[in-house]
Image (cartoon, rainbow, N blue to C red; front, top):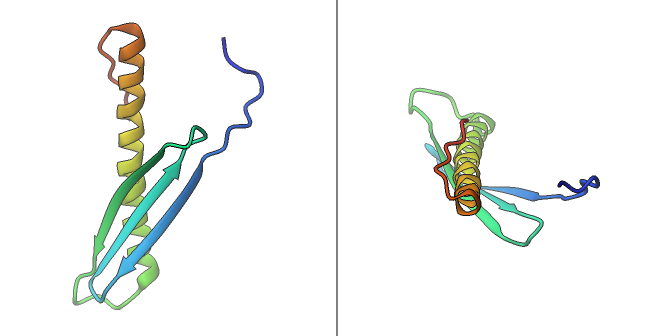
Length: 92
């Protein structure tokens, strides 16, 4: 059934690119099998707001992680469908 030893680790890295009004985050998750998944997230600062880079990074990173989680759910659904030959819908 399942392995009792669960020592699998994934490595997740988030890189940021910013200017005065935009923050872009790129999330890369490298799975134990070596496959790397990438997702993007963006944040936009209202020109009326003060410059607080950490907030833009948090929002952009959160959006990129949400995109990554959606991609992971879709990948898992496809793998299950491939094995079971039945439609699968995994909930968030």
